[in-house]
Amino acid sequence: MIARRAAVGALGAFGLGWTGLAHASTYEEFFRAIELDNAQAVAALLRRGFDPNARNPKREPALIVALHGGSPRAAAVLIGARGLQVNARNPKGETALMMAALHGHMEAARALLARDADVNQPGWTPLHYAASSTADEAPAMVALLLEHHAYIDAASPNGTTPLMMAVRYGRIDAARLLLQEGADPSLRNERGLSAIDFAQQANRPELVELVAEAIRQRQPHRGRW
Image (tube, rainbow, N blue to C red; front, side, top):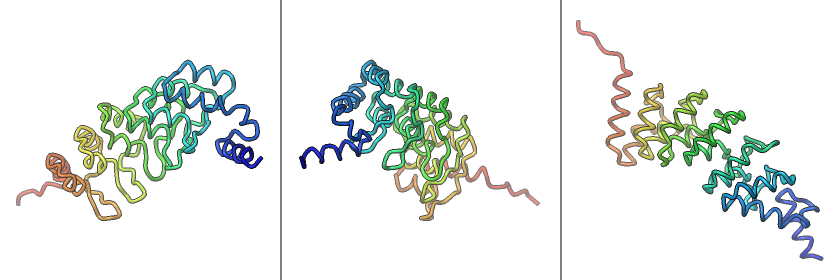
């Protein structure tokens, strides 16, 4: 009886409640299908009434699991699901659009934006994640988010901007795009660090020069008397 109560309590934590005992295998099947990027299995379970907003044992929404785990076909099915909570967050405060931005999932990002995913929010934003991404699609993702009115100088909880993230992670293409679109290269975070400081700490001299040149161009030219 004690073991049974423990099992019920665990399933309840995943949003399955008392009926969860009957559907535990379905729950496992659902997340296994996401892991395997089995879009057909995910779609079949959704048609049977499975909740697209289900969370795994780590309390991560299914869509975030799919995007973070490299399951684009399963993610596409989930994004199209009726009743999906597009802006649901994982325990770290990350959304599906942030995951798409980090991993360069362009199609998922476009689909999420079409469903009114939040581009701007307090703290870390999808643009921060796109600017620090190692995916080849990072510049295109930055451009996509800016097209959807992402705040270019968004401040993280400690004041770090997307430009600072781009230079920290060596994304010269993303950093150049941000500067071309108006990112302020002179801003500092709460620790007093600027984009140049981030580039220097990461030993990226080409990015130090890129940001320094942007600062020089912003300074008014002194005329000769």
